[in-house]
Length: 250
Image 1: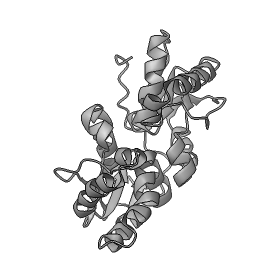
Image 2 (image 1 turned 135 degrees about the vertical axis):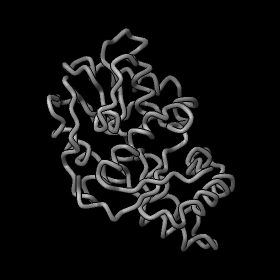
Image 3 (image 1 turned 90 degrees about the vertical axis):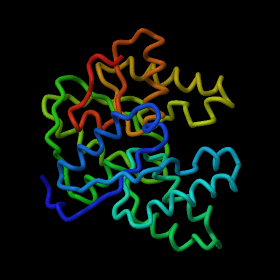
């Protein structure tokens, strides 16, 4: 356990985790609590507003995000298991709330928001969380976390200390998987071509587990792997770090 017993954190699980992958939220909370962090999840905390923002509905995005700001006002450290949501809050809330009465609160929330691997490594100073996985792991860098927040090193640091795991290189690890939220819907053909490239890179490795830090990328890649009948599984990194990878989930 780290020396973080005095810290408390608000867990912002993200929409997709809340609605589809609650196990990722539970794994994140367990992972933080093992480091002595007191974790709270406010009732009614829903969406960062990114989907509406990216679709061009700025007013609607601001309404959703303003509600989120109020719920995170007194949240201490704010932890998200998503570089995508983290990027929305830390880099786009400034634009969304510039010149509004919520500008100061937005700046406060922005300063206190961290993606989970970033928080563990860069804030708590943790590199080994006591995880174990008997197999070969390849890591995919989710775009928003990589390009907006500079993630990647933190996840690799944590994965390198997973007992019994072999970390294998993934060609094109920084190349987009083609999901991109609404991009996969509006530009389906391009999205599918990008996914095909990603699946080919995964197939060229010897990994049995593809790990990433965003549930959206995980969904895109897992779907492609399943349709191809691949034995490789895709999981969120917190599931590995919390020792909660379920071998039964394909």
